[in-house]
Image 1 (cartoon, rainbow, N blue to C red):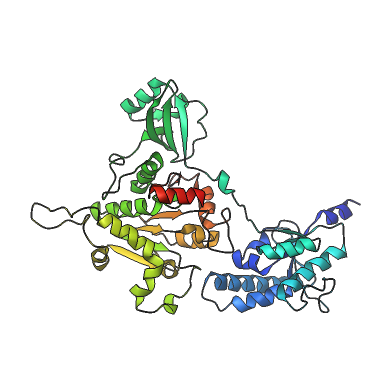
Image 2: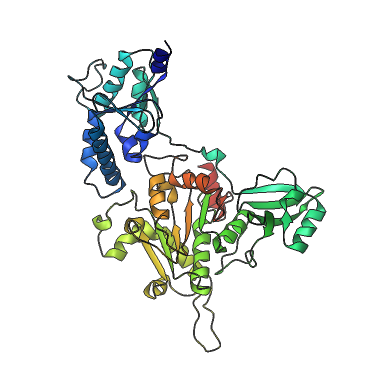
Length: 459
């Protein structure tokens, strides 16, 4: 009897093609249950195998995995997985039946739906769940009485995303001691023993809210330490305009922090601050050999050859926002002149000069895969359009002494296969928040202009 109950407790998950293209490891993430892949899904995956983009790479990985499983047993009868589940490939004996007349029987989506419906009818006590990232397909599944869910591998709701900073009430003496000793032990404070590495703190005098101090939690000393000197004054003419931007500038200029993530709506200054800090550390301080600024040519891997002109002309439409920020920074003032009369690299220089001198590179993420990027300040703009797997691919390119900055707005997603919770940027923020070489801050206040701020909030 107990064995029968265990069998009934197992669920059947029918996977859609887009799930495997989004995450080729998805088959292993449904625990001790039955995973069914309709033969139509394999046929659709096969059509993507020759693509040079992320879908093509994932399709090839899925095919290799299924081929490995084939060697371990009969996929029609089921092959055991490391996750304690069982993998099946469903091969129907005849054309799909049981679908309403409005559903075209030769359409791939409907054939996949018919597979889910067949398994639901085999044993009504055994839950059948159709997993797809296609919204319309989930609606059609619901009409057929089949439970449908989106594929969300450990998603973090955007409202619950780690903010990277917090406000802490303390005494006047605590703040005075912080300024005097240049540190403050967290044992002196209440309810802050759960501070994460490099989490930023606003210390507020409980008796005088105007009496404040800004600091960062240092995991090694287990104390709150002051921000870097000169952060408030900014770099390259870019001055932080609010507390979040001050925190962002501190982590961007801190060489001990190797991975920075900045999340915020349009106009909060994410890219501008990142580029200004990158120029300061690369050109002024010489801490890095090169500043590399990139962003997805969506989708990642799309060939820019479809656009007319040479490589620079092809990049312009995709990299326009980066060029705009560079021109704004480099046009904020005249270049300083040294006592010898030679111009220093600073405001007033053209970004093309920096490119010609090998100090600045601007390129799409298409060209980053497979490289080893050492001793560079790498900024990845619009990172919210990347999947977790793509983000992993980029970060694992980092060689010695490389710093990576990820910027993006998790509410502006162009990739149809991800959303505000499942994108690579949100995923990275949550996965790295416990690491002492990373830091994050969520920028809230727009500083681009009054009009831009109103648009971001109202539209």
